[in-house]
Length: 117
Length: 114
Image: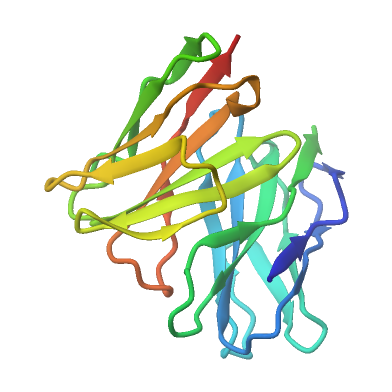
């Protein structure tokens, strides 16, 4: 069974600075998708960025980028120029792409990010 | 374009009762998934529906059930509520149950069982 681990329960960053959130996963599959979701106090899970395992190039969405290390099974999220609105819970998630797989998201426990003004 | 709508936002029920939660997906989305979020267990997959058929089911007891209607709206039902069922229940919709798409989540229903 696949597992996702986020080793940092809480992180803090100064406004305008850069922070990196860690995520590792365990799988025997070669084809899968990885996601970072943000959950602010409003509770809605918001997709931040998505990475397809077969793509070597790291995904980037504006101030958000990932460092995808497939061999190491690592998928960290870098937030540049942090803003107060980035404060939230961040969840790393895995989704199998194997034929016949369930296809549901498997989440890590989350990292609570605080942004200091 | 309206997002994923979940009703009600908050719910308080007594142990032993049953509850029904509703989810209206984004217009045009045909796949709906349900997740349970608790402080202890985190986010856990309940089930996924596509075209009124349950495609996948997580590891939850039979007290948890769901269905999807022809307009893609989905409901989940929990019978004989237990204190441990207190959680945030999140619904997510996707255009199709294809792995390449990310899900769009609703704001959830906070269920408290007393």
